[in-house]
Amino acid sequence: MRRRRSAGCCGRAWPSDRVYGAGAEAERSARTVLNVGAGAGSYEPRDRDVTPVEPSATMRAQRPAGLAPAVDATAESLPFDDDTFDAAMTTFSVHQWGDLAAGLAEVRRVTRGPVVVLTCDPALLERFWLAEYAPEVIATEARRYPESEVIGTLLGRGAVVGSVPIPLDCTDGFGEAYDGRPERLLEPEVRAAMSAWSFVGDAVHARFVRDLGADLGSGAWDARPGHLRTQPTFEGSLVLVVAG
Ligand SMILES: C[S@@+](CC[C@H](N)C(=O)[O-])C[C@H]1O[C@@H](n2cnc3c(N)ncnc32)[C@H](O)[C@@H]1O
Image 1 (cartoon, rainbow, N blue to C red):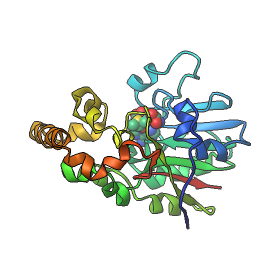
Image 2: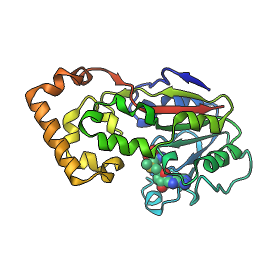
Image 3: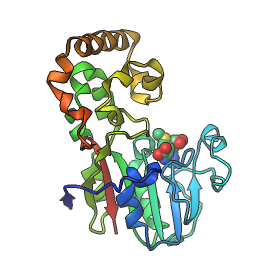
Image 4: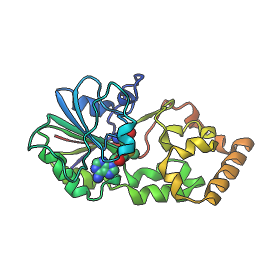
């Protein structure tokens, strides 16, 4: 499998373009797109015939008007015939599947063309300065996410893994989106929006807020990763696996 340096990020306003740019590019010639683990529809193309699949009733209910209602199913058992879709996508979902290999085989079975997976690569999580302040959160993430090389191998068909640069002002709410805005991570509601923080105890939250708060106050944080405050993009653990 090839590993590509950068999958690109075109910097337009909608999150799907800013973070999912190369995924959207891979789906460009597709008319019909399957979105597995679609959730509320983030990154879902608005200009394609999208079939969302989402097993959680709570998430299905959060889909905004204007997006197609989601089919109640799991990746491991997709209720579609072979080669139904031109392309398939799944974003921030594969780490929650009960059986990754079975899920990807199903996605491959029902898709004629490219399959695009947006996920975190556990081997790259240490790039984020958070590893110094909250190693428990990074360790939690590392345990949850499958290796991108494994995803690519399971998908086959010349899969390519590309790094996804995260814009400095990214509003998508995952941890690395705040790499250049550390103060935001001191806000409990910002951390509450990231599932990894729900797996660590109150003591970790308290220590993190104390230590990062102190380093921001003293200038110690700015003396080290402070350049991230103005760096236009950050290449952390976010990757796009694209299989033809
Ligand atoms: C973190 S959310 C991501 C939602 C959306 N794709 C996004 O990027 O915002 C993960 C989603 O995967 C769904 N999911 C969990 N297990 C699944 C499975 N076995 N098959 C399909 N989707 C699953 C969850 O219900 C949840 O909506």
